[in-house]
Image (cartoon, rainbow, N blue to C red; front, side):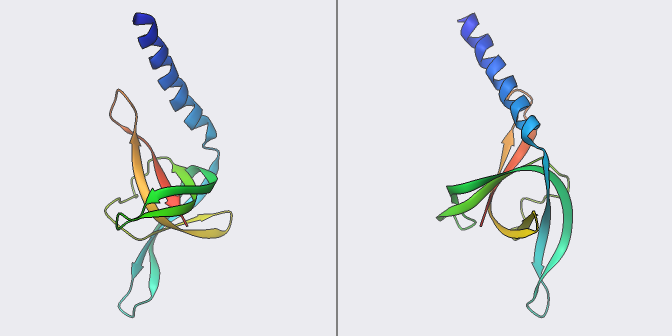
Length: 121
């Protein structure tokens, strides 16, 4: 039993190290808002370290309905990222994507946020 437990711990540590190694790209997260004229504008923006994984994946959208994302973005935690805000945009390599889902992933053992997983269209 002790051998299995230590193997699991090593696997979990390896997974976290592996994730950190892949965060070699940067993108821009933009908090979008609608102004008094009805135009959508950028309220705040900031650069994040990330890994962009292209490909279709089913995710739960903001209203809980399952939709197909065009890609998943794995983003380092950032103090300006407000999960309660619903309208986010992500720019990567000059292309804008709408963020349709976001989940926070916590490190096992210390209960701190490891990264966010964003589903984008």
